[in-house]
Amino acid sequence: MTKSPFPASHLRLKRAYAPAEPEDGVRILIDRLWPRGVSKAKAALDDWMKEIAPSSGLRQWFGHDPARWPEFQRRYKSELRQHAEELEHIRALAKAKTVTLVYSAHDEEHNDAVVLKDVLLQK
Image 1: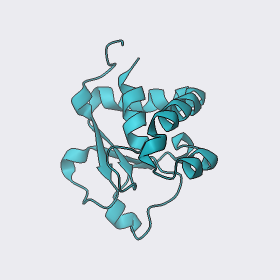
Image 2 (image 1 turned 180 degrees about the vertical axis):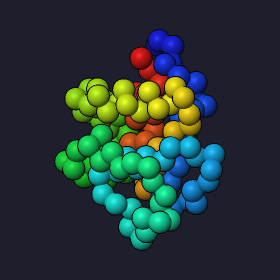
Image 3 (image 1 turned 45 degrees about the vertical axis):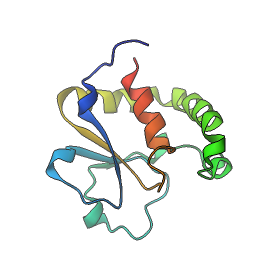
Image 4 (image 1 turned 180 degrees about the horizontal axis):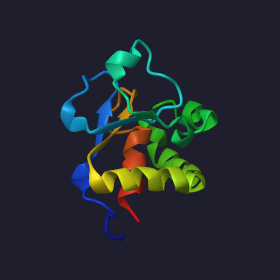
């Protein structure tokens, strides 16, 4: 694994249902669908990058089933290879400030934000 292009502490993960805080820095929603029951004001987002979310087909296949996690990671990383420009945009932001990837999944260990963070930390 190569060295991260920015300090790992500059990239955070946070559920959309948790309150926004100043230390979140730049808040980017990375889900394809808007989080149910969350107002735009409460979300306090700086950006919504739904294009880097897993495809609808992959999201539906995964269904947040931990048994499918290893294969989901492999497939999602493959999809992310098509979004180099978006990934570089997030990396550039994280070089200068904290970036929080906002997601709505209930499982904090098996979700697309975990995979995306891993990909962003590699260069």
